[in-house]
Length: 361
Image (cartoon, rainbow, N blue to C red; front, side, top):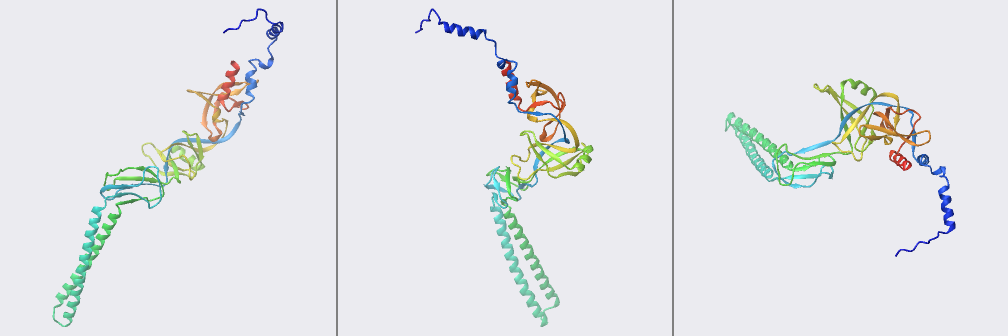
C-alpha cells in the first residue's frame, strides 16, 4: 500500500535542501586528495645504495649426506614388510623379512657336514695314536705311520671347510632379515609384500634428515673466485626461503664434455621443510659492490614487466616500471633502472593499488 505524498512540502525542508545544493564541496573530500590521505597508512622504505655481496647463482639439487639404498643379498619371496615411505626408523630396526626356508635348509646341511667332519677327525686322531704305538714296538712300518698322520691332517682340513660352510650358511640366513643401517627416515620402499627378491634387487632407501647438502655445477672460470671467498647462500625459490650455507667443497674433478665442476654446499642441521631431491639455487659469493636494492615484496610483476609503487611529491603512490638485476639475498633485488636513491617505495603493492582505485572512484 503506497502512502500519499503531501502536496505541499514543509518550508524548513526546502531551506535545508537549498543550502545543501548551493554549498561548495569541502577540500577535505576532494578526489585528488583522497589517495594522499590514504597513503599515510602505507608502509614505505627509502631506496639507498647498499654494499651487498656479488654472487654467482647456480641451480642445485638437495641430497642427503647419509643415505643408503638397501638391496637383497639372497633370493626369496618378501614375507613381511614393516615400514613404508615416511616412517622414522632407528639403526638396527627390522624393515623386511625374506623367506628363509631355503637358507635354513642350507644351514642344517652345513651343520650335518660339520658333525661328520668332527667324527672323521676323531677317528683319524685315534688312528694316528694307534699307529704311533705300533711303530714304537716295530709292528708297523714308517710308511703306515705317515699315512695315518696324513689322514689326520686331511680330517682337520675337512672340519675347517665344514665350519666355514656353516658360517657362510649362517650369514646367508641372516640376510633374510633386512635391518636399517642408520637412523633416519624411509625415503622409498622399492618392494611389496609377496614380490620376489634377488641379489641386487633394491628394497628400501633410508636417509638421515639431520645432515643435508646441495650439489651444484660450476664452470671452470668461476672456481678460483668461489674458492677464494668460500661463502654461499642457498635459495629455495618455491618457498622464497634463504639460508646461510656451511662449508663449500669443490670436487677435484671436472666433466670433460661440459667443463664444469661439482660443488657440495652443506646446509644447517635439522632444516625443516627441506628433503632430498628438492630444487634449490646456490648463490656463491664472488665479491662485494654497492647496489640500489629494493625489497622483494615491493616488486610488482605483470608478465615480463616489473614495477614498484613510488610516492610522489604529494604522497600519492604511482606505479613505476623498473629493470631488475640479480638477487641480493634477503636484502631484496638489485634495481638497474627506473628508480633512484631517495625514492620512497611502498612495501605492499596491493594496498597501494587499492588506494589508487579508491582515489579514482
